[in-house]
Amino acid sequence: MQVIIENRVHWVIADFYEKSLLCHVTLDEETVRKKKKRLYDSLETLGNFPYIYPQSRYRIDWITKGYREYICEDFHFAYTIEVLFDGSEVVAIHDACHSFLNYNPEDVVGKE
Picture (spheres, rainbow, N blue to C red):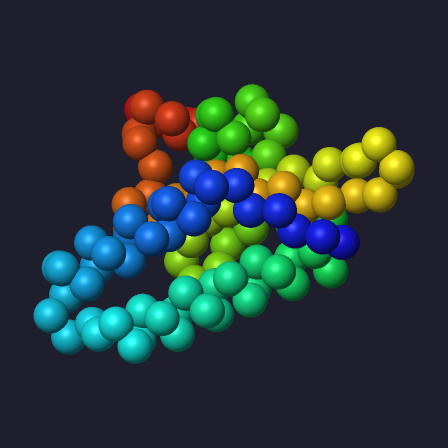
C-alpha cells in the first residue's frame, strides 16, 4: 500500500531534529541524518501492515478525526487508511509528535 506523508509531518520531524542539534552538543548531523533515514524507511513500511496499529487513545484531536497511531523512533504518527476512487487504499500520515514533547495536556484524554 502506498504511503503519503503530509507536509506537516515533514515539518515536525525537521523542526524537532533542528532543535535537538542546538540543545545537545554531543549530537551531530550524521547521527541525525541516520535517525531520519530510519524513521522515513519505517514510515514507508507502514504501508505493508497498516491495520495492525490501534486507533489513537490519548490525543482528543486524533481520536476525533479517527486516526490510528504508529510509534517509531519515539515519534507518534497519526494516520488513516484512505480508499481512492479506483478502490485502491493508501496510508495517509497526517500528524506527528515526538515523545519528549509529548502532548499538550489540554488535548489528552483523562487529564485531571
